Image 1: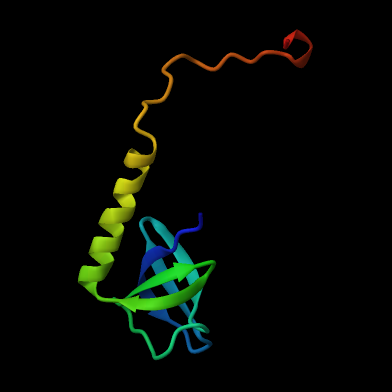
Image 2 (image 1 turned 120 degrees about the vertical axis):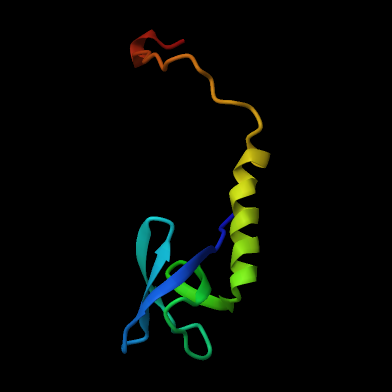
Length: 93
């Protein structure tokens, strides 16, 4: 399943691209698929480098909160604490 990412616009370029912040990463996003304009501080939903929708601050917070809760729901079993042990191919059954 592919999920979009909620990012905040940092800078708008005249060529239809924006720089956006996603956590600690800065991404270059195309506005080709988005109607209307955006400004620094706006929130957008991005998929595959394209802005798909403009979001309000409340919508962005809700989406980010929901997205952050998904991994814990999908993997409720804690990781195996035992260290990984490499088994050479010739020794494998």
